[in-house]
Amino acid sequence: MPTHQAALNGITPYIYGTTRLGDNKVPREERIKVARAAMNAGVWFHTARMYGDALEVLGEAFAQAPTQVPKLIIKIGWENIGQLRGSIEENLRPLGLSGVQLGQLCLGGELATDFANGGNCYRVFQDLKDAGLVQGYVVEVFPWTSESPLKALRAGYTQGIIDGFIFYLNPLQRFASNSLWDEIVKRNQPIIAMRTVSGGPVHSLRDVPGFAWKDYLQKRAVEVAPIFEKSGFKSWTEFCVRFAHSFPQVKATVGATSKVENLNEFLAAKDHLTPLPESIVREMEALHYRWSDELDIHAEPWTM
Image (cartoon, rainbow, N blue to C red; front, side, top):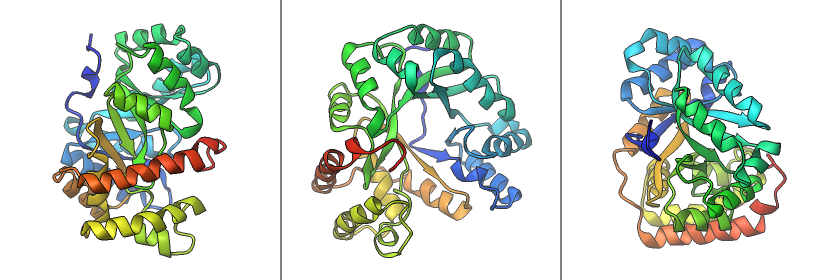
């Protein structure tokens, strides 16, 4: 049986995010092509049932090259213990696999309450590991869900069963609350950082009307763009990958794309993981603390 955090052994510093593989506006053969390119690169993958037909695209790509099937993180959950096994199996079937490396625990409703209180869910988590469906778990965090994992972490319930935490962590977003972030750092908990490039190049987020998904991202880009310019970096992708890896707790960052050329940018950046200058990291970290207090922890679910 894997030891605690052994499921993270060998994790690649860049993980290919498959969100766009479910975009049926992109020809299926192009989606398979980028999946195969990521498989050839030997990086881990991150996927979920809610990403359109991404699982079916991956299943086809895996069938074409069964010796290159990557290690995977899949989203599982949801509202109660009884949904856990089914949420894993609905991912595995189209992938043609019997198990995956990591389950990303998406905790809602009574399952989140049970998790916070050290309840029966932990026994079920172990049962699913023993059955070989997953080798470990990372807990998904948003500003509006931070309280449950914070309570569980402080109480010690996660020890020995939870391998780390996964949330948006990039120059414009840090989706763990300030209190949870401080606890994760204090306890040196592994982090998988999501949404590597914040949704696109910072100058496009700042200057192109409608490019940012929400107005708050445009406003944050206004504050971050001068920091990026001051850094002297030419590549926003490299800047973002190195920003995530400037925190020693970060083991990997997840970036999604449906284009081989963008994938190649991520792959090139993963070979340059030297932390950013500390002054730049501290400047952006101060923004994260302020943004979290001003907006993030007050946001309604799924509004940011």
